[in-house]
Image (tube, rainbow, N blue to C red; front, side, top):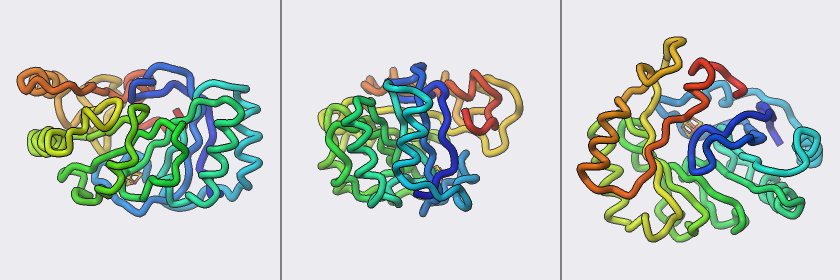
Length: 226
Ligand code: SF4
């Protein structure tokens, strides 16, 4: 497998936010989101057999939460799926962060998928694979990263059109961060003011979770490996 980094930190978004978590960050992505904060994953990384990845995870913690992220992890599906099965058999709780563009049928059912639907402001609008909707279960969460009102309306219409609240366990709305954030650990680095987003959600009566990527409020937003 091509691995950028494996480290232990605090889960920053989703319904698992705030929990200690081992992150396995895989290299490469086939999308280019305008607000991407992981461009360092696009190239490079270290070749590691899946068994070595598994050993490193068990060295960091014998159990608990593991998040597979990237880049786009499902580009390495052939080795990743068996690794996820082995980690589940060891009793880990697994999260998979994915762009929603790759097919997700082969992801083991017990994995909690956190699936993006890219909004127009990402520059990758339309990349979501609609057949992935059929793979969603109450374990899974669907995430929209929002740059402004147009993205918000796209997300609101998408969840209504596809009745996402009945398909997934939760829907996340998260403001995009500035491409070049300041060192401030506050919402001044959000492209969309969280207060405005909260007001829109309440006005429209949406049953979604407002997520704030809490790792960017704990550490300086540009910090890698946290
Ligand atoms: S899918 Fe994720 S890693 Fe790929 S460009 Fe978009 S934000 Fe970056």
